[in-house]
Amino acid sequence: MERLHAVVHGDVQGVGFRYFVQRKAQQLGLQGWVRNNDDGTVEVVAEGSREQLEDLKRALQEGPRMARVDRVETRWSNATGGMRGFDLAW
Image (cartoon, rainbow, N blue to C red; front, side, top):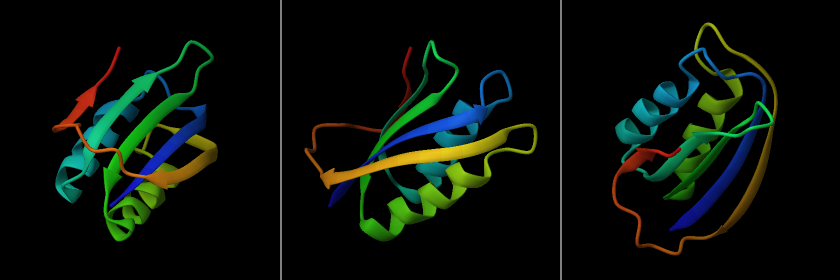
């Protein structure tokens, strides 16, 4: 199990991006959270298999129809466990 920490830059707030990420993560069976940051980015922490996380990363790079993703910063580490479900964090 691994952990993906991603920060998505672009026009990604106010376009349903967090809900898009939550749906995709739930479909993939991932644990974690997604939130809007004050600087206009969207931050994601997800845990699961490398394959599942790579699928999520690809989805982050595309985003929902109304979003414009300029870049996705990613950091990989070992999963810490303890997260249940995939939440919208505030």
